[in-house]
Length: 196
Image (tube, rainbow, N blue to C red):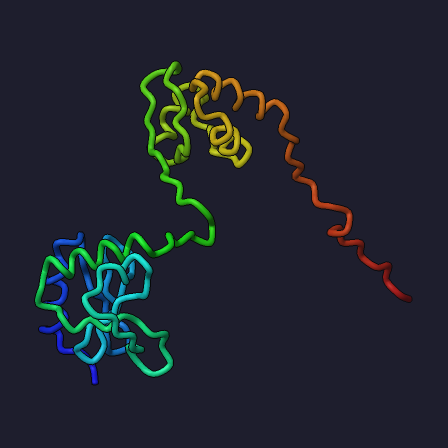
């Protein structure tokens, strides 16, 4: 049996003092989050909270039940009417949950930077965007391109000035291999001699 949306909204309202609470529908029931962290579920009009040692210290009564068949046991919360208790329990549970690490590691905030002079400093994690292109075209001409080597230079040299970036671009262009337009020998067509 799926949970009633009115009951789900009631639980969200009851937990609101703990932080930014929202529920997301998952396979007929709901996962419930605080400040973007999954801390429990609402299944068949019952609230279940993940098991943590810090949450256990706040519980009025410990009752472990799986929210659905095959699930790990969670704290079944019978008393959902006490807002202060709910907020304290959720805060304690969040403190006990391990922080998830993304597969790529630490999330990096990209910085959109539009310099006003050559002496401005390159920000860490700068984004090579179309907003930045006119600045470089002003000093390097309309043939400027965000080539991979130059993007790597910008990311590796945060804290340097854009004047140094201009010099680095020119040096990279100077050391670039010339592009050949002639095809490789394996692409030449050699016609066969006519057979008589």
